[in-house]
Image (cartoon, rainbow, N blue to C red; front, top):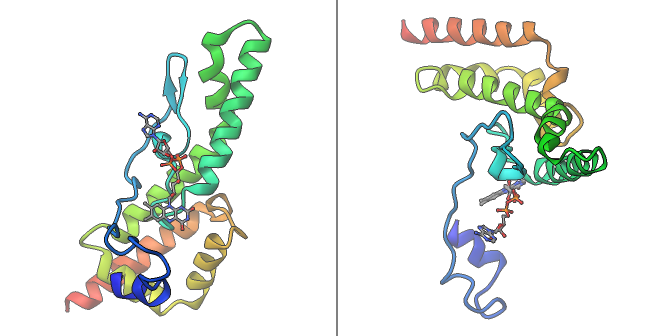
Length: 166
Ligand SMILES: Cc1cc2nc3c(=O)[nH]c(=O)nc-3n(C[C@H](O)[C@H](O)[C@H](O)COP(=O)(O)OP(=O)(O)OC[C@H]3O[C@@H](n4cnc5c(N)ncnc54)[C@H](O)[C@@H]3O)c2cc1C
């Protein structure tokens, strides 16, 4: 990674960059539902809105910030600031659903005993690869995946595990 950075950002052009280069964890395992407590509304990473499948969190951070502001405005307008979290939780339902689905898929694909078999199944399935790219491009949501497709994937991974164990 450092070599790649050096190739694209030569030290003489960006002084000090390489010395300060280090990795950072994505808080993809965090889940908060409801996204806050009391009068505090959590948005973005603080609310656990990093997609564990894609590593993306910028879009959800912006969307949740926007929804938190809407919820706060609605609560203030009604003279009920204590109900901001209630408004926010309702507005966040589709976002939390997306996160829930992403975590389900992540558990299915990345659980240690499944990983190798999942990689085999995905490597041999062009449709799945295309669906993943569409997810990354924002052309599809997890909500578009039918519950049956989770079951089918689980079945394919299990069959591949059993086949691979022979
Ligand atoms: C290496 C890496 C690569 C990533 N790549 C992508 C990507 O390609 N696409 C994508 O969508 N997402 C990516 N993400 C995730 C994305 O960066 C985060 O999900 C997103 O920035 C979250 O926004 P946020 O506003 O919640 O938090 P942040 O962007 O972390 O903002 C929080 C801010 O609060 C400040 N802060 C913290 N504590 C305090 C305090 N006590 N007082 C005042 N200020 C404070 C911090 O300094 C920071 O500026 C990546 C993350 C990492 C680490």
